[in-house]
Image 1 (tube, rainbow, N blue to C red):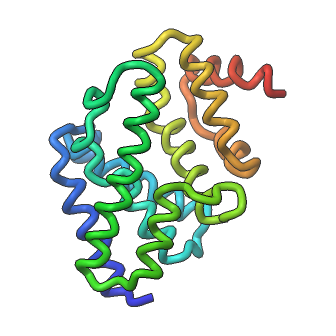
Image 2: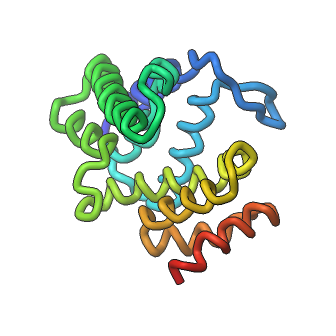
Image 3: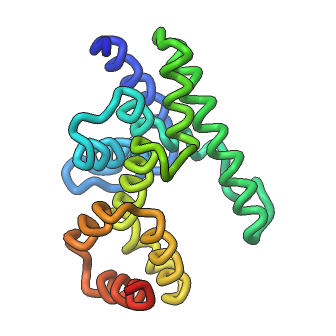
Length: 198
């Protein structure tokens, strides 16, 4: 790995995500661009799950949802079909955007293709990198987004989402998830979601 080139790619991803008009509040620093914060959180989870992560995985973690706000959900019809169309379009948009930025800092096509496969979560069960990415995404959601998600939707919907999230995760990630400092309300939802899976 060329450390200087890698750092240029990370900086390019971060600059792109720093343009997000939506913000989240960090108690230490105040409002920050949402996608920049989420990319850093995802990188942190990948680094925890795999301290010796491949270059492709480390890069993919930082650009998994790059410039997500440019493809809004309401650009597609309501309902499950529209949701799936949106998710498919988003995945391709993220992969294409990341590929352009990687090319701009001098990465070869082989590594760009490897990052694309992880971004698109291809070969999920047979690719360790893709599974680590899935685990990191699920853990980041449970740690940072479950509480707000629970406040917006009926409990039955939240239980269903937690069950689907759990099924995507490796056994190691599930064990790690159970050590997260959930609120009493979130823990109750998780226990309810996992009861039928036990």
